[in-house]
Image 1: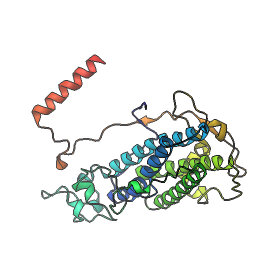
Image 2: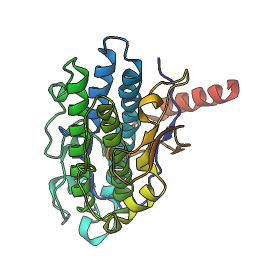
Image 3: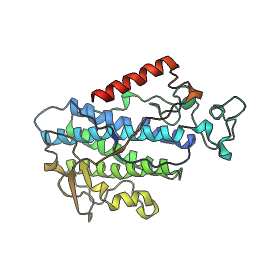
Image 4: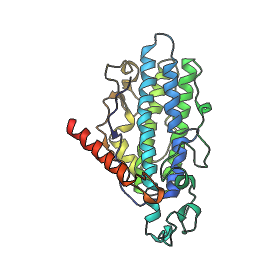
Length: 306
């Protein structure tokens, strides 16, 4: 049973729409090593967990719950990068005139970069469960062997590869909307590398100087450095309301030599989340006046009884 707070796990700053950046970020959402896979892999491993090793179950399940918020964050970021693109007045994206407000979708507006026509044709300027070249997300990505050690090894590999790809994504755009989310996910992937490394250490694995993966000069990734200076990569959030035992594994020295301690912490406060505006050129939501009046009446009734 899950409880939901309607907030984003990290704020998303405003910047110009950028459909090419949105499409690049699709890899981090629906790609083989994206957030949809981490969410589904850890949840299925927890659903199918056997035996009485509860701290390991709590650990895998706890990261899986956090990944739900990452899917929401990255999808919302894609939406923000797409939303309003046809009306954007910048030179590189066209003015959407002459009765063709969606001409950006077919590349007739001089747009730079590679974008996905389905973001406008199928998704109404919204995120989709696909990778950066349009391949649909697949359940075959999910690894759940039933062997705890093997699953933990695969989870560490998944976090390390996801972090590697996000470091590459970071270098593809300086858009503030895009960068804020990519930087946050780089920092949290670093934390999750350490979560699974700590679990494997408790089973006898010695990582030596292997972690973190990839290694890079964090000073060259300023948004990431800001988050890591706050210790975002040295803690695992606990979203359970009935207590957790994962601290018996996670609290203590970081698996990265010389980094200090790792700890279990409370979830972040969160950031406001608001629905996107209506997009008449996409016929979205497309309510005729009489249905809009009915919807407004229902919203007023709900507000009056709350």
